[in-house]
Structures are given as structure tokens and as C-alpha cells.
Length: 108
Image (tube, rainbow, N blue to C red; front, side):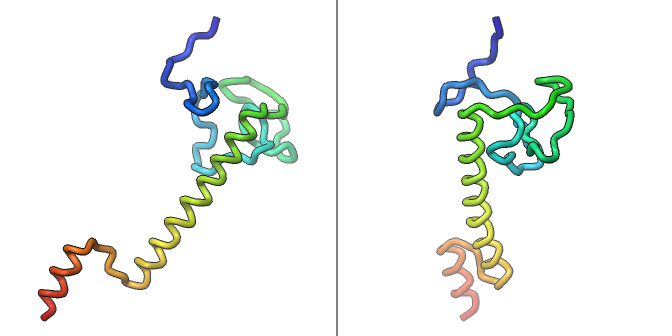
């Protein structure tokens, strides 16, 4: 019997999730390997802690869905941060209304 910490249980799908398999912050493609997330075209034989030496294996339906959602969330976050970066590069005062009023009073 495999025992896992209850905090690893996903609130959405009810499955237990292990360590994050995309340490660079980019979620794997939806049809990447079940064990390591690498695309089938570039996979060959890989070694991971979870599966040892393995060849490409089709991901589960839950993994495909989770990867699609993670990629969508990453794109949304990138769009949100891009807008902040553009405003910052243009020199917009990214401050709250109270600080903006204080700066206006000081400029008078």
C-alpha cells in the first residue's frame, strides 16, 4: 500500500500529485511523457526518480487536462505581467492613490 501525505491530494480531481516536474516554470506540453513531460519526438530513454529508466509513455487524461490548465494559467499570468512591465517601462507611477495625491501636493 502506498501512503501519501493528505496535502498532496488535489482539490479539483482528487488525485495525489507528486513533485513538480517542470522546475523551469514552464508546464510540459499536454502530450509530453507521463513521467517527465518531455515530447515524444525528443524523448528517447530518460531516467527519473519516479519511473527510473523509461521510454515515452502516454500521459493520463487527468495529466493532460492538468497540463492544459497549467499552460493556460501561465499564459494568463504572462499577459498580466506584460501589461505591468509595459506600464513600468513607460514610466507610469505604479503607486496607489494616496501616494499619487501626496506626490501631486509636493509638486505644487
